[in-house]
Length: 168
Image (tube, helix red, strand yellow):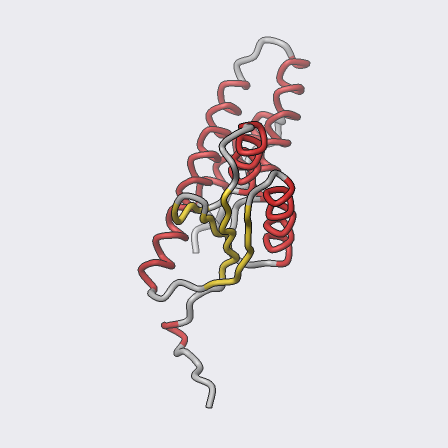
C-alpha cells in the first residue's frame, strides 16, 4: 500500500544537479557557474544544486549536464525531495531572500532613474529595468512582497501611478 503524506507533511519535489567539472581549462567551469546563478539555484554543497521541479527547470539542468559532460566532467540530474519540512523551508527561504534582494536593487535603480534629467535617459533606463525584471521573474519560484514594490517603482518611472491596493 502506498503511503500518502498528510497535507502538513507534503514536501515539494525539487530537481537536483550533481556535477564535477575539471578545474582546467577554467572557462567551462566559470560559464557553468554563471549559468547556474542565472537560473537562481540553491547550492546544497559543492557540485550539488537544486531548483523547484518543473518541466523548465528539468530541461535547464539536462542541458547543463550535457555541457558539463562535453567539458570533460560528470553530471547527473535527479528529482529529489527534502526529508524534513525544515530543509524545505530553508531552501524556499533562501531562494525567496535572494530574489527579494534582486527586486530591492531594481526598486532602488528605478527610484534613482526618476531623477535623470532627460526623458530619453529615463526611457532607456526603464527599458533596461523592465528587461531585468523579466530576468528576475524567470528565476523567482516563490512570491515576495519586494516584487510588488519593484513593479510599482517601474510604473512610477513610466509615468503611470502605481495601482493602489485595497486592504483586505
